Image (cartoon, rainbow, N blue to C red; front, side, top):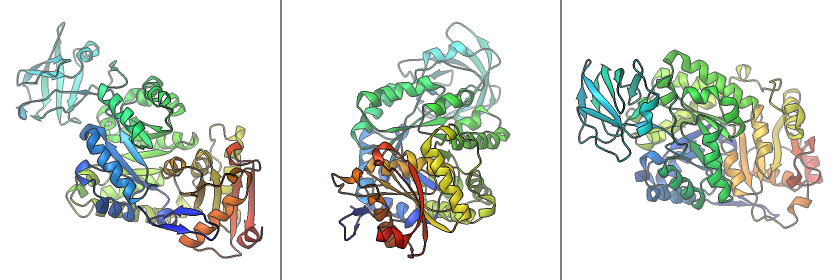
Length: 500
């Protein structure tokens, strides 16, 4: 377990392993494989700047995922864990060994429910109904477009397709059909098992793959509601349907992941930067965390240094004001995992120093901002930080909403969010510029003392950062207790707060 810092008042805080705010505002999500479920390895990533651990259910078992969670909790109980589902995707079935195809080769394509092995003559897809929506002239892209076929003939139960891009076809590779809407179930049986597992194993986020509309999210939320689970849903946008229904998906999601792998297969490559920027802007306006994912530092899977283009890609996501950037193979199976996290941390720190191009977003037309007290107070705190020498913004939050709203305005000053549950602390670890802290144990009369959280925050900042008596702090709190939400914004010097 992590060490603790204890104040004279008896408040006990989880130690922030990489300092107050980690020296960066942009958060880092790192993917872990079960063979690396090692406490020393995870601590190295955490100290290098990792904020959130991701587990990809497509590449592990429930037992392997449990090993990762257990190791993460031994490093620090405040590290959030995100579980990716497989989602409604089409794949080729298993092959006995990689099958070589050349341009011009023709094969039959069929659907199967029993996992029949694909061969040189017949390629089987894991969904029997997938063929219904595919017509002559449609393209099938296998393994993120490494292989490409065009349908030249359609019969009752099969397609005839010709390879236009050849290569070796391996087992269970993804299949994309650009521009075609294929009806698939929202959840696979494996997804359902893993969501049930997540409920019972202290997971904080479900990142649901291939979200097409709100119905896909309802299927996940129904399981969570049945178990009264607080797990938050991150929607992965990976296809045209997801883009078309982005507004309704946002309404039913805690956050969004821009999954550029499959999205880059569905759309022309030159459109991805435009789509990425549009999604980030919409998420900020909706006050939802947004993660940029896929191949951000991919060359570091096998090399100790990134390419200049990759550095520019990460920098671009930070300039666009994404909450988080993500590493996949780089940390899951790569040869330089800690170096990849450290590199991403250095890029974030350097870009965030460019304050002229990273101003607070105080004038953006945020959804519902004029009708929500918390959002209005959060914007006022950010504006005050521009006009006055405010050192920190401090808030208390029961659900995490106040911290998330403060993050949406992308202020320049660190935000310290005092949380009342470990789950609130963990989910805020994904939000831009927010350092969530947990006061534990919680006195029974905590909610009746409306200023107690300010003393907690000052104790924490003095332990982990720098704070002088004349420093100015912006405070957002609730006059009637935190469980009733924010109701005031206050500006005060540290000395006066201590005297109170």
